[in-house]
Length: 286
Image: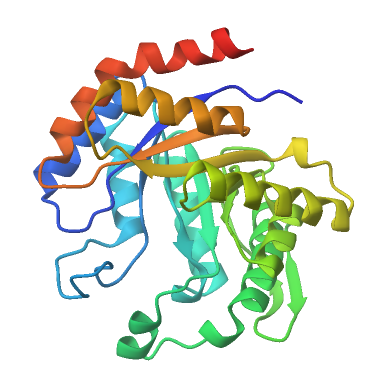
């Protein structure tokens, strides 16, 4: 099964201005990128600590839906523990309608301990089990007239969730995973597996583990698209093209370039200029 090579930009919403975000969104939409992303954190992440400014990820996706016309939008990835499944399902359906059916639903188990500690958010110690239940519930809310679910963490009784998504049966589900248990969960539920990061050697290793996870649950790994977010640190065009090519050879067909630094809009413009050359890899290597 062959998947097309697609490219996206990611501006996280951390340590960035609204004007810069809007500039990146415009470049992604007008520059021909396939998708556009933010992240889902309530406090800033990284070595400098949690006190930098950061905007809420789903509010930004609603704004992205209104600010763009053609590029697909999403979050790499939503932290499942931050919201009850009905809240997340409602947010997703709302953004799918606002965008005219352009939502890519990114989700993961969550990992940031400091956020859970500071805000008293429960569930990190059982995050994989909660994610498993949430995925079952959200898919049911998207497709069924009534949802009944009696799990360990969530309980639904004749639950109604209208309207349904624009996309049928629901927006593509991207699951961020690298651990053994989350890889099996991804193999069961994902349309796209998001590898959160890593150099080509690491990606090659974890792809092998994912193939094993798919075999364990009886799914053909070729059915699941592989995605990766990575930075372009040197700003040398050849470096970006070479790195993208290495990931493509490993089967990573959904490539998201993470915009870091003080001038994300400038980096986005440079990548947009290189996009035609990046796309040529598909023809050359097919």
